[in-house]
Length: 240
Image (cartoon, rainbow, N blue to C red; front, side):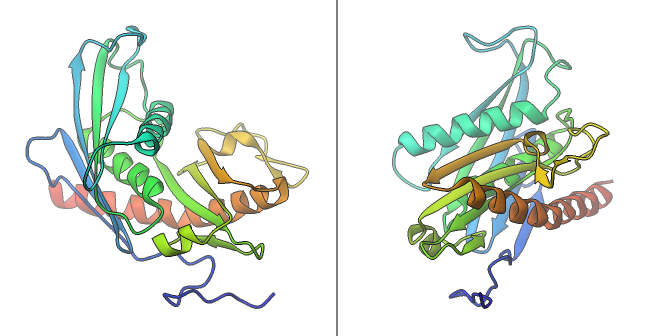
């Protein structure tokens, strides 16, 4: 198969230009703006505040995610995004440090031009670092799409997303050491489940396609991790 060139000139595996800035909101305990191409998300962290919500374990810290769409009311999809983000962020934060507290993460969509949920996860992760919330490791998220022709592309624009047969939102730890055992995370050449934090698929995808998405996503997550670490590091130095 020849290399596919997309409308914006990228190759199938190429990410859009990345941009991340932290500490942009005065009243939040931590904040970050994350841009991938024209998709832009603002994340703000408030807390930890004393007490947990109903049905939460008071012996652990509780994370809540509040999704704010660009305009209009929050719908079913946004509620799903809140739930996915809550589970993802809970799994990377150390919840035993501040028991019986609630940390709120407010996600404000500034502009959606595709791969919105992964951008929101990346923004929230940077905002948690900015707020000094104790974390096991950072996480990076990527969207991988499958075209009718069987072609895979990473980090789609809105238009590309709409023309796809299925897509996978994948969240990877930025270092495999903290989540993987000493043994290699490959079994007979296949990636094992625990090298990934969150995986959500929409549409119909065969197992082979899914494993291909994982492989592509994992390769791209190294670039994202590198970018996230560099941008956090340069800002930490300028803060001090």
